[in-house]
Length: 571
Image (cartoon, rainbow, N blue to C red; front, top):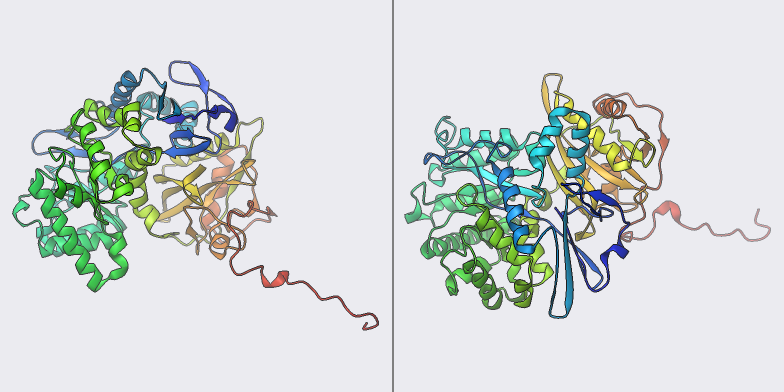
């Protein structure tokens, strides 16, 4: 979803205007320029971008017969997102709505968002199977991502390495392959009472299976009576080692208090043994609003530095009352919304629950009560994105790339540059030896500024080996040229972009500084795949990459020192 929220001055004056056919054929303004989130907000001439991320859903086969085998299947997660969108626009009166709150005019608009939408659109134009996939996704674009993890799965004991090994592998098989990898983020699940097995399973799930968070469920696994145990402390410490968000299922106030005590114990342990990991301790208290209105200890638990509260299981008016009361009474003060995360708990709860949360945050009563755009950004997705290891740990190229090579595209008769690059990505998808494991937005300078740039995880099967390769899609020379290619072997992805004379950037963009202008996706993909060969082609240099985004550190390079003029006659 792309949602534009305009202040007193029309937001259309701040964007390059393009018409875009929304589902159903209606033409609307497509404010896609310089935008990478699915919600654009303009308040008093300042542009904001909001991601919508569902922080709590399940995939698999629960022992109690609640099933969600695949997010793309009928009645699965994507279908739920479609139904939620349709419920939200019933409340707002359509995909466009407006109101005035405390002297500020707000105008909202929901439309699909590139670059993920562009990849699916180009795929649909190139093959019938992808056209059907695009039809399945219709009306689901309000959600950028969804987090999913195992139920108390009937397969959880199928493998001896650890309880939930089989369930975690099933999650990985679903979320690290196209098309689900473009929409879902997978977490693993363990049982702390397994001790070392649980710790090893976390490591395996992250380093081998590509999962990016952890789910713990004391109630279903019957450790409610010893939540604050040394085994649980060890599990949280292991999660912090990989910078994983950890979401707890809770039932009732007492379990929330116990999780809070556990977080404090784990923090104390890390402060003594590994203080650098303390910022990576991230505990999400599930169902924090259910029955906890005006409860000071709950408010304290979800306001502590390393804690967050997740909102599923409540409906209006209970949710509305909780969020307004917490806004006023949270010990975190004005930073209250930095501790709240939207989640659905699908398929246990339904679109009417998610609708109540989303629609309240995007309509007049929330703003009248004192809510702000920053609060909405935090709750609906910003908090969760910022705590993912993709953004909290250096993303280094995991595979040696002897010949990093990028392809470039510009607007031409073949189409817009982003369309051409998206067709190249479709060729990656069609190659049976490669899969896309994830796609994450890239920002400029901070999390409030983004464009149609992203990090893309890929997995190659070549020479009998599996090779994980991080690739980037970037704007070069403003918006005139797009490029796609691997991060250099010694490079690290910078979520906030690169600047001139940045050694980290020089290594990461090694393949991007040569011009390989393309308009044929097949040829472009063949060229990218030469990254694993030692041979390089003679290529024309492209410089500069882009205007600097931040000042140089330490002054100009040594080679740029001015030359002193010679004295007359000294020659």
